[in-house]
Image 1 (spheres, rainbow, N blue to C red):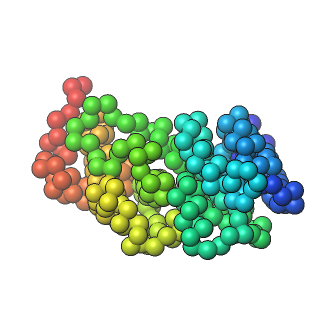
Image 2: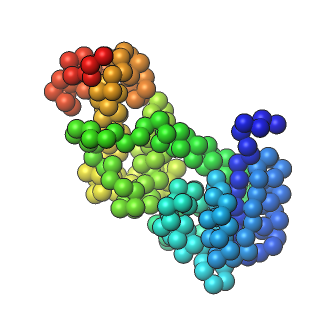
Amino acid sequence: MNHSSPPRCVLIVDDELDNLALGLAILEDHGLEVATARDGLEGLAVATRLLPDLILLDVRMPGVDGFAVCRQLKAQPATREIPVIFLSALDQIEDKAQGFAAGGVDYVTKPFDARELLLRVRTHLRIGQQLAALRRASPPPGGARDPAPGREPSPDLPPLLVHARDLLLADPLNPPDPATLAGLCHTNRTYLQGLFKAHLGLSIVAYLREQRLQRARQLLEQGEVGIARIAHQVGYRNGRDLSRAFKLRFGVSPRDLPRPPR
């Protein structure tokens, strides 16, 4: 075992013992650490104490239901970034929409298939790691000029939009196209485009382009050299394409942008 990379921890919150036992067996058999809780209040307490990497959350539970638990998790700074996958026998579009509106990243209907559950858990654990690395590598620039649209704090945005934005920016070299992004978010492209335009002022493609260019400008102003290397970091195929888009956006070529003194 690689002790420098501890097992990922998943919290299962479900009032049915059979579901807890099944989820526990599936995840532990594949090298994941698993914690459990029998109701919403216990789930909140365990999540706050353990800060798991992901939460599998039942919707129908006595007392506090899963949607309310998720909203409380997203309201707490310590647990806000933990991805939540809902587990429920409710499979109507309205139920899934309510889950995403509460802040969930995915929705698995019961009875679930073991392979599907494991695949979704692994996918969102990987995305969570990518987003954490992205946040560490790209801290908000202090006092940067001309800040990119749509970088307002996440709590001010619909959870579905925050999830879609994070997926879009997680891998600069291989971002999902709008249709794929909508599928990953379990919504349709038209609705997702509307969210981007209403809250961020740009279409999905335009928002991605703006973020790439703003990141390129930040790197240049920090003294990064090599247009081709910067292009690769922000998701452009080559330095020529980046230079053309950069000049069109900022009115100056990357090479002519003022740099910090060496």
